[in-house]
Image (cartoon, rainbow, N blue to C red; front, side, top):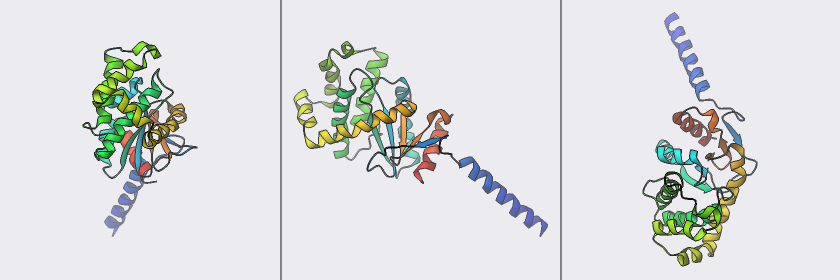
Length: 218
């Protein structure tokens, strides 16, 4: 009986330790957004910019792909910050087109085969590896040209889409990324449209994934 009692006590303690290890605290590992991202239940959304070096690091590491592998039932998404970079608005336009293509092909934006991923790869490499700045805001056509080549479309194709109801909706949906980016900078990881992870409090990729897993349960 003493053995069983000790075993029972040990199991309870182990359970408490496990619960404690997985516990997260609002204001520490995450915050609740004052303005939620609409229609984002059961999702993980990265708030990012093409000129953000930490975003590029996460892109190279495949953070969103690893999150998707850990939680295959959750939807992965991205919101580009229009106020960051000389061509934040133009980037929102061209990435909206890529998102449209991927959604129609039923490909997750976090998939390395997605047009969204390929487009991000092209702009990250151009900005950080080749140090391209496209006239620091004075030559938007050159900025567009890179994306148009990746997507295999013309500027007229892009303009037509951006002026459509679908295009306008996708671009407008990114506007919420601007205030979110002011919380912890970029990249930001938002879970279920309402909880943003404090990346500074996740000392490893696995810690980030674990916190996201806890928030997906909320």
